[in-house]
Amino acid sequence: MNILSVRDLRVRVGSGHAAMTAVDGVTLDLPPGGALGLVGESGSGKSTCARAIVGLTPTAGGQVLLDGRDYAGARGRHLRELRRRVQLVFQDPRASLNPRMTVGEAIGEAAAAGRRLSRQARAAEVARLLEQVALDPAHAQVRPGALSGGQRQRVALARALATRPDVIVADEVTAALDVSVQGSVLNLLRRLRAETGLGLLVISHDLAVVRYLCTEIAVMQLGRIVERAPTPMLLAAPQHPYTRALIEAATLTGLDGEQVAEGEPPDPLHPPSGCRYRTICPVGPLVDESRRICVELDPAAGVDGRRHRAACHFVPAETVV
Image 1 (tube, rainbow, N blue to C red):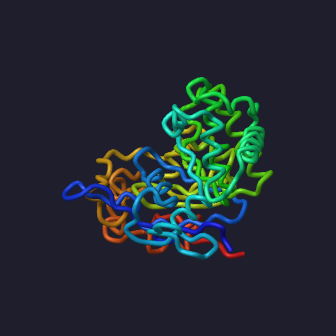
Image 2: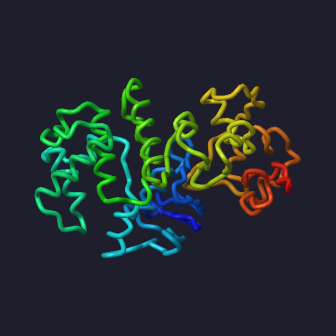
Image 3: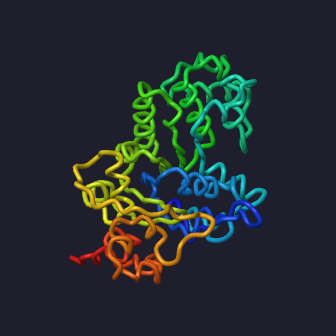
């Protein structure tokens, strides 16, 4: 059984004429100890999806399952249980850490949630967690403002680990860090997963990050998953034209690429009919007028039979060996 499963998750944001579906029918699975990357350009809905999974953003439909139990729309005790078991680590540790609390107070507060700990036991737990993220326990006495960006992100990870979660959702955790310290944080996440068996959901626009951390990648475009496959397979042979565009932009492969179609980017408030990528797709009706199926039929309907479950009418069927 998967430790975390998301089924047909939907999130609506805004109101009135400005309302839009930011997450539209997302389905994901994370096995115990697994590492899944959720990638896509800015505005694709990745972070909104992450916040909905941990209960920080209301859902408009779907399920968030932990060990088969649905926590979507959880309240009270069930919401506290969800947030203990699935911890979100934010992009900017300066915004997520209280500048008035010492590092020890911030971590100790999380460690004591739902548990009765003596002052001595709390201090010992804080020291253990700081050592786990490769920080000197003496940092417990300082405030976040006195730390470097990499150290603050390690403190944020220690605080997340304090609740003894089953899953950590890492939302662009290296985006606010200098290049010189990004590698050390990625190495830390990789080591923590190996040592603790944590499930890891990595939200990123950077394919290099998920390539290093994750065994599987799901690609998100305009609120929907358009492709999902094991990391080596997806990077070596992407099936959806949107995925190919992401990889080419990141210069991770030697793909020659296709003709770049000129068109209007899809409006998230009023998504186009059929395929949502068709207005800029380099293989769709903009370059081949005979491909009217892209205008008339949503490709999400046939993903089960296609390679990488790609939401594209022109992806070959999956070969069954």
